[in-house]
Length: 194
Image (spheres, one colour):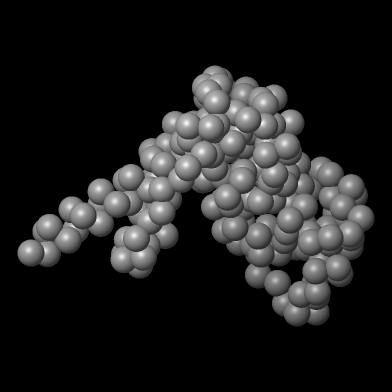
């Protein structure tokens, strides 16, 4: 791992990006170190571990190849995140991991369950990640894009070549599954503590 001295590359992101554009390897390493953990977390939300690592590496490769396309408008991390999300989606398509998303009407699924507050307070981030991994791939992908990445149903529909209704349906299914698992876990924990 390369250690940077302050005089080699400034910590200011604009200066760092300028150095990366010039091909400065230390700047590339610094940019990687600054964003690696967050971008790996993005990949892990969409893919199981061996595939997440592949998408992660391919994502950084794309960032460095297309760094000139970032014009300084908007948040750089957001720009990077979009590349990583797209990389994960491409990986899913390429490896046929993205199963056909079921198309059902959203009316029956629209009414969502509400979680009791005590159930939420007992959850840990690691446990939530494990629950997300249990979701069917279509539901997990839509849930991540909508609830975590902040895309609209129209954007998700365009990205996944599905209808907005299907996106809404998959989100509702994901929420119902997560809520039922969380409630079930909370009830089991309460019984064990008796």
